[in-house]
Image 1: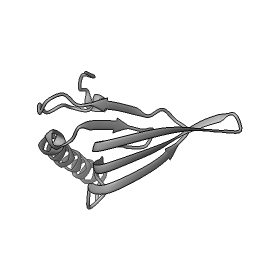
Image 2 (image 1 turned 90 degrees about the horizontal axis):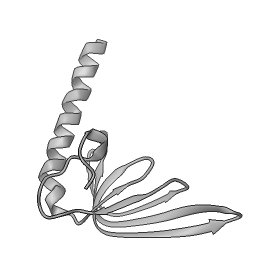
Image 3 (image 1 turned 30 degrees about the vertical axis):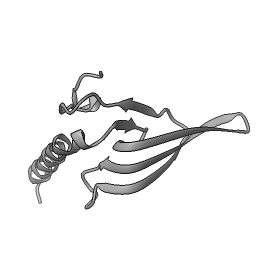
Image 4 (image 1 turned 180 degrees about the horizontal axis):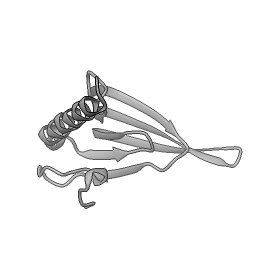
Length: 108
């Protein structure tokens, strides 16, 4: 497989993922962005924890969709994320399709 073939494949996978995102975004109440992943979810709970001067976050999501083109199944019933990095949670407005900020969309 040439570098051009690989690039074409990755571009096609990203386009499929974006189309799936566009189709499912209206089903969810929240968008959640961590340092490693982007999620859509209907229930979000973020709990900060302090441990020896460092703060970390436990993020629990229910009824979620994961932005990851390498996952065969992106819908997951429960997600638990532990992170020392920022967590961004936004309530989505209405049923309009929105492009995630990291794809050039407007934050709202």
